[in-house]
Structures are given as C-alpha cells and as structure tokens.
Length: 123
Image (tube, rainbow, N blue to C red; front, side, top):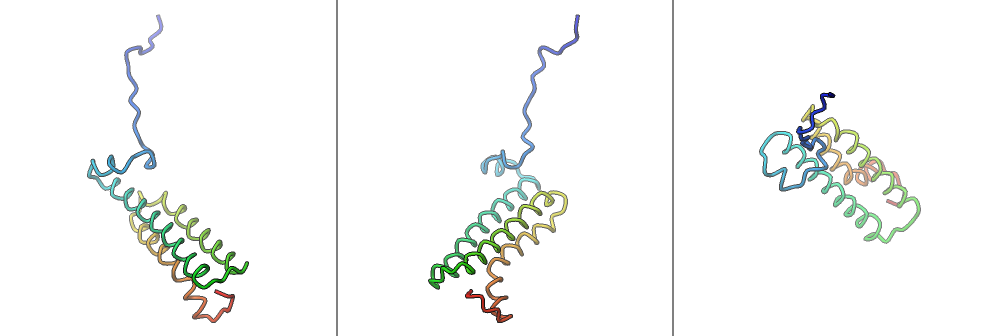
C-alpha cells in the first residue's frame, strides 16, 4: 500500500499582501499589516497627487502642448517606478517607507524645480 495522506487537509495561507482585504488587515494588529496599510495609503495618495498634478499643470493652465504632456508622463512613470521598486523591500527595511513618502512629494516638486532652474519648457 502507498502511504498517501488522504485525510490531510491543506489550508491556504495568504502570504501575498495584495490578497488581504482592508478589514482583514485591520483585524489583526501586527507590524506587517500596518506596513501593508501604509503602502496602500501611499499608493492612493500617489494616484491622487498625479491627478492634481495633471489638473494644475495641464488643464488649469490650458497648456495641452506635447512637451507638457510628455513631461507629465515622464514624471508619472518615474514616480510609479520608484514606488514599485521600493514597495517590495519595505518589509525588511521600514526606512524605505520614508523614501516612498518623499516620492509622493517629488510629484509636486518637479514643476518647482524646473521653475527654479528656469527651464522654460512650457511647464
């Protein structure tokens, strides 16, 4: 006879942070869940900041030039790339959460940096 465990039930363990819902994260109070909630909050704030950045620099100024749109796309890609690269390492090093917060402010600092450097690219 073969020794296969027939009665053994396998229990699925949720190890991916994207699988957990908000209420499941709030239910258990531990360090990892707080980091996941913080990362989701930062992701939401980045999306809101990109929308505000688009509205202020393109719609409000009524500047629909190709250079201005490409500048927005470059800033959005850079900030989302930084966010995704550092998001996977925040569980080992919590100081990387500070870098993600700085990334959030970087979205709004780009136009100020270009104005300070007097780069007149219709921004």
